[in-house]
Length: 170
Image (cartoon, rainbow, N blue to C red; front, side, top):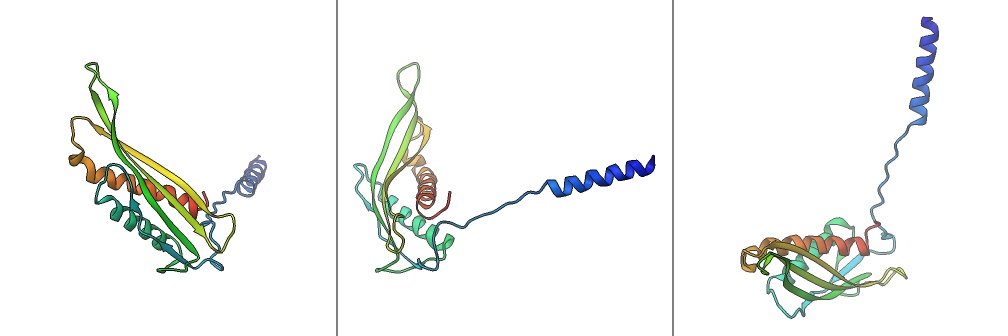
């Protein structure tokens, strides 16, 4: 009886270890680093009707940091394999949740950025798209009180969206 149990246990373990395998893979992106080596990111002009003077430099710095830190691309001033340019097209607030007294209880800060991504080495990789992200905050707070942290969060989300749409393989 012990022999039969031992055989079944051995057989069971052999099946479990050979049949169950987990395989993880991560592709670093869709860039071919044999062909694409340099990047230029132009300053984004703020053309939004409501202008936050800190938004453009904050966004520019975050976008450059992401591409330089998370790719093997070298930043150059011109004649790059990849060129990114664009403009800030929207920065605005609006009430979103209305209370029983017809006043807004939540306010939404929305930022929109148009990005033109040109890959001069690989056809079919270009992107011309507007990305939009927002955060809500209590209407009892003024924009000045929450603007710094909200802009930081929104810029991070926008940079993620742009990176994923252009060079990440998601």
